[in-house]
Amino acid sequence: MRIAVISDLHLGRRDVADHFGHEDTAFLRFLRGLEGNFERIVLLGDIFETLTSRTPGRQAAELAAARAAHPELVRRFSQPQYHYIHGNHDLVAGTVLGAPEQLVLEADGVRMLFTHGHHHDWVIRKARWLSEAAVWTGAWLRRMRLHAMFRMFQALDVRLTHATPDPERCTFQRWALARAHEQQADVVVTGHTHLGMKVEHGSRLFLNSGTCSEGQFSFLSLDTRAGRYALHTSW
Image (tube, rainbow, N blue to C red):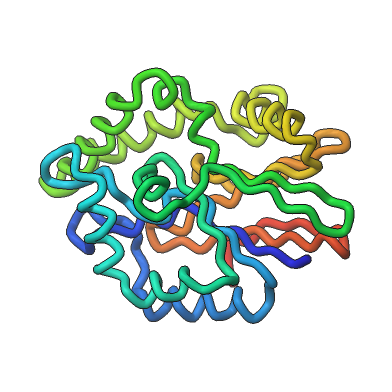
């Protein structure tokens, strides 16, 4: 089976707080390229941005606004080739759209676990309101053109994920491998950190799809029949 994975698009309502960073027509060309080369495409969370409304606590309304702002992409995502797993920025899609928090696929003797990865973060697990308040504050910093302060918020968020390519220091990888062990998965695929990675852990493989926000292209290709797994940052 040939599978593509993209995550962390953060599609918003096209206001100044929206940091998707692509023209929809250009991104549609990218999606059509994936559709022509892969049997399945996994949308691995934070596809929509629902935490940046002008007033807090309006996630369902922000999801609807984001979907209305990107109708052609939403139509594409509704095709059977796509599998949508929610993250923490689009958590509400779990109840509104029925998006699960993880997916397990088996093909050619390979068992794969797909999960966004936000459950690794202590703040999200124990004080989700604080994490969501930080995202909401960051959106207002963008609206107020305080870009330097917003970048400081972003840098702090990256540090809090404890994600690094070094498997000895990366608690995110250790968390993901523990989830893979629980699910008896050979490959664990995550998003969330915006840091694309491919790291072998003995008989198990850790993958991260990076981000397609801020105008970036990043995706994973998984070919279970050929045993090829790769991270791509262009197409």
